[in-house]
Image (tube, rainbow, N blue to C red; front, side, top):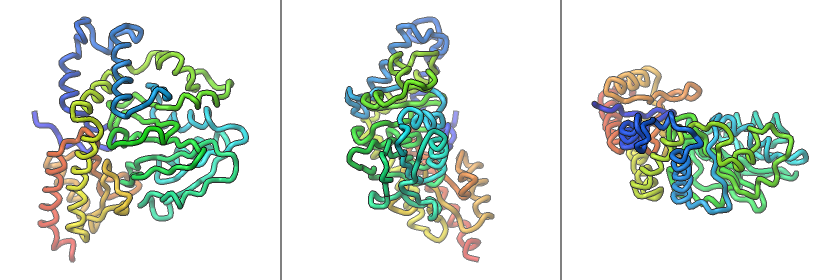
Length: 367
């Protein structure tokens, strides 16, 4: 069977070896005579899956024992509310760096819970860039935390250096770039990420948080929206997304087999360079949305000279087996989401097609 060149923004490509292993174990996991989806979440077999996932995350991201690892539901969108509900005190201000639609949504939810401030924003430049440290102005009030969105899928921008302020907790939505590159986990007080980009299928949300944060949580929260509930119960307070966690553990095993995050980062940078080089080679035909120093290695966004060429590009790409290349409706143009599981061959094929399409249409674009 020929696999599609899957550039979907999410849910996105999963590693083929992971899918094949899941297929082989689908109806009989670990000689239980049951699918993972049929296992009790209280069973030893599933507890082993859960612990394996946690241990692999600790190893791959070098997470110290001062952090908790949780597997929740509700996606990053629920975290937009849970974070301020748990950590935005009555007399505090939560600071947000706006770099795209998802950070805007996070801020919107935080405003419902307490006082907020925009510490930086690149909206006036149509979110083409990431703020520098010097661009971030923190409020003078008692700061609960600084929130960033580490990668912006719609606009194709990514933080390459994270902001750091003494005594200020940094919280990051890493849904679309976690595990794509090496990070220093100690820079962050809390990281959350929907799984459907680099971690596994949709339905699981990873949360990594410093244990010391738990002391700040008020006692009047709904049980399910209190991080302490899930810490005390090892993410098993209620029935978790068992199959999703199983798939996540297989993806983590695959990352380890590739050589870990360092090897994955080199692979991702090479994939991205193939596409950005096309834009450098043909700057009047393929125009990147993001400024060069803010370009994402996960989401490559670009436009063509006109709408007619864009439609033709997307149609011909579809006929050649490329999936998910249309840009987000708010930006238009094209977007190639090249998450960890997107193979090098797919990016090579896309780069080749981009060159061929430009050659065939350069006269049209110049008219």
